[in-house]
Image 1 (cartoon, rainbow, N blue to C red):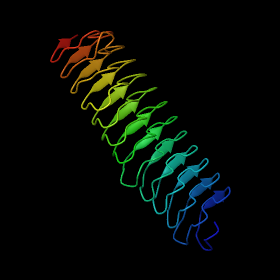
Image 2 (image 1 turned 180 degrees about the vertical axis):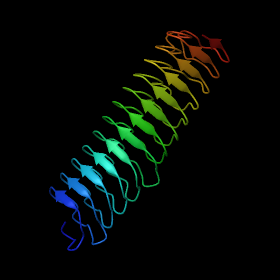
Image 3 (image 1 turned 120 degrees about the horizontal axis):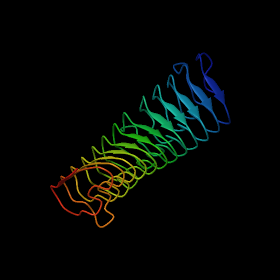
Length: 219
């Protein structure tokens, strides 16, 4: 709180924590080395952990907990990043994102409105939009694919640029190489015998586990 004399409701604990806050910045909590270090008129933020939200200047209402979590963005608001390196390189233009877990959303730069919950969930995505990944390594290798939903450990873990896939279950759609698929059940469409194509519907444990086709239905 080195720069502020009349700002209100701020709490800063740690070297260089909230060191540039001005009289316009209110209601912030910063705990840890370099937390909210560049904040000026930011309001209503919570930053806990080494370099958490370190670059934020004017962004409001963000919740960031973890070493290097959400440390790059300067002006975005309403972001939740909890976990080591969660959303660590997200830019200010990336909005509406939430990441909880070790390296969840760690590579995300400009993608919007994505949710990642779990160890390395959505860890490689940089520009893909509107993705939801819940589970250990769910959508872990996705880079630019958009509008995917993966729920379950390893769900859609290997696809890198596919879009519009929905996978629910342990390992569901693990190595899908197509788009517009719906796979529900443990290992459904997992690609154990090859990579599943596009526009398939597989419902049930192991359904289309060995399929490489396109436009099929298995229930």
